Image (tube, rainbow, N blue to C red):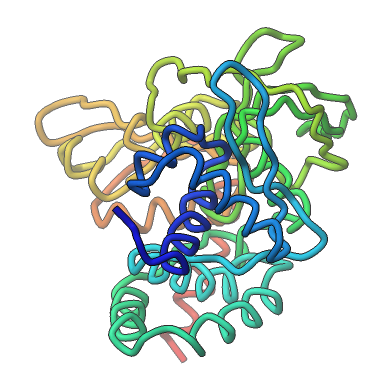
Length: 322
């Protein structure tokens, strides 16, 4: 039981920040106090300026609503370390967030205990971000945050979308998850008009607008439930601008390990050879994938691909001869 009232208020505020809604009974159980005490503590939070809403319904409950100002966040150790690393990554890799991420990071590290700063620094030093064609995932901050909130709340959202053929259309979807893949952000969502799952590039989304309608979360179809694996499988099967299929003198498992997200495109021919479909909208990505094979191969590809590879090979040879 939490008998120290200030400590209990802080614990209550932390709980309200971890979930959208809490029933009075759940909070009572977590804090070890009566439901009546919970009600009084909610009044204390309101007196301190926190926008706590009462939720109507059979069980009733509470939620921390949006206010004029953002209330202080209470983070446990793991959350503080995760947020620090995420802000450092955003400061260097997410277009449009650099300055805001640095400001937030400066505020957080100013109050972060030394032991957590050491943990965060160690984790950051041990990891890196791989980008393909551009230095960072392209996503407007307002679009990214709006869609992230809709995914969290399972809220239907509308937006305008530009297809790969430059056609424009309105979309109404149930957002599932955001995934950063290579140099781009993608939204995995269930299209309410098509009654089917779709993948949308965030750099082609404009004017996202929440509708206020929340729906139960859907389960991803095969090869779900991992959103990253689902996205990789769909991108691998999508039509590509440039065709390039390599016959590689290496076992299929070896090539799968070296190509990562393209593992679904590897097909064994014999125990020591396989084919790899490296087709892509990016000539640079095709060249990088072929370099990663670290094995002999023959290539069946579009003229644009072979021209690009010959040109880059000549540049490399010239550099080595100088």
